[in-house]
Amino acid sequence: MRKTHPNLVYVAATRDKKGREKLARWQTEITVNYKRVRRYAGATKEEALIYLGELRKAAKEGKLDELIRPAKTLPGTAFGEYARALLDSAEWKQKRSAARDESSLRALNRKFKNVPLGAIRPNLVRDYMTERIKAGLRPASVNRERSLLVSILYSAVGDGVIESNPIGQKGVRRLEENNSREERILELGLTDEDMRRLISCTDPRTRPVVEMALLTGMRLSEILSLKWSQIDLPRRRLTIPVTNSKSKKERTIPIGGALLEVLLAIERRGEYLFPNGGTGTHVKSIRKSFDAALKEAKIPGGREKGLVFHDLRHVAASQLVRVIDVVTASRILGHSSVEMTMRYVHPTDADKRTAIEALGEWLRGRQKDVNALPEGSDRALPERPATSGLLN
Image (cartoon, rainbow, N blue to C red):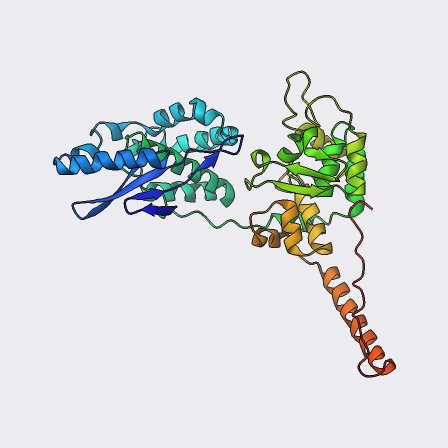
């Protein structure tokens, strides 16, 4: 949210498949009867300025209160009814999170379906989030449901159904998400040999997807949506465009020797690396194939006690931060911040022991050099021990 005008606030925006901003939310910020009031003003600054002009005109004519307060019957619209119409709209159906939104709405409807939009208050939402946590849901999942609820209420404000969003901004805070997934993966004790066995047990059609995840740390959606036009073999790099990147930033990944072999072995059968038959689009999921490979490789599967495909990104990230600096690893992984990459830095006892031994070897070597070389000679620190690659 940023203030760009004394009475206008730019709240948020998402992007369409071509990277263009959409769903931008401009709000007017005015004071009525000593109370600050925010109202949806439009998708562009121009629309917002026009609406602001209408407010000023209404204020001069003594009709401001009438203009900014919707009809009393509107807040009686039930949450479930309004949310269903919203998610069925063409605008919301094209969102990348459309499938996830449907799942979140089913959960929200258990609590709010028949509740009037105007009756939703922070205490009800807090109770709902507490109930979900007690039911065993992870904080991240609860936050996604909360985010959908916030978005629906903001849309209701824009449509004039309710006056303001009672849980937006600081109304109901997000839950702190524990990032224990990385530690849980380490607890599985997976070795390089386990990963190689997983690859060999994977169906040939799916194997390149698994290999690319382990060699680059790319997300499944980024891999499956790759087009041949994004692969630059002469320059040895591939590009993940804004439209496929979770961070909404284009990034490039170098193509190493192992990745080059994987790419050259993939048969070109259309625009995408992994086309979906005659549909003209790409494969959307490899879950059945991946689960079968885990079972054959005798690796536990499932989010609660085992591995899921996204964990391959965690495995690759853990390897990256062991062999390169965390900033470079962050750029390769496409993280929005270095802090996010730091989640993958979980040195084991063996790593710590190796580091201490290496430090001792360095110190002994330096002391020996001090005695052997004349004063003033150039001294270089010994090279760091090489760390084996995941798939070497």
